[in-house]
Length: 159
Image (cartoon, rainbow, N blue to C red; front, side, top):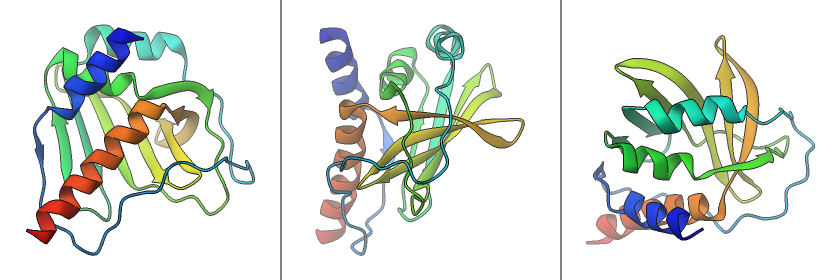
C-alpha cells in the first residue's frame, strides 16, 4: 500500500502538457455506479503484469481538455498501472469516455483503453482487436490523480 501511494505521488510529478481550459470543471468524486450500460470482464492480471514489467511508454489524450499525458519512465508508467482497479467496470448507460490511453513496449502499442472519468463513471475500458473487451474500475488514487490534473488545468486558465 505504501508503494502504491508512493508511486501515485510520483505520478503526479511527471511532466504533462497542459493548456488552460476555463470551460471545463473537475469531475466530482465518484458516485456509486449502477450497471445499466455495457459490462466487461476485468483485463487479465497477466496482461497488466506484462505492462508492469515491460512498458516503455504511455500516452493519454483527453477529448474535452487541452492536455495529454506522456510517461516514459518505468516508475511513472507503473504508477498509472496502479490506478487500474481489480473490480470490473460498472458503467452507466450514459457514461462517455473522457479520453484514451495507450501503453507501448519498445514503440509498439500493446494495450489501449478508453478513460471514463465523470461522476459514477471512473473506469478504464480496454480494447482487443479494435473493440471494447474488458473493463476495470479506477482506484481511488487514480480518481485523485485525474482530479488533480483537471484542477491544475483550471487553475492555469484562471491565471
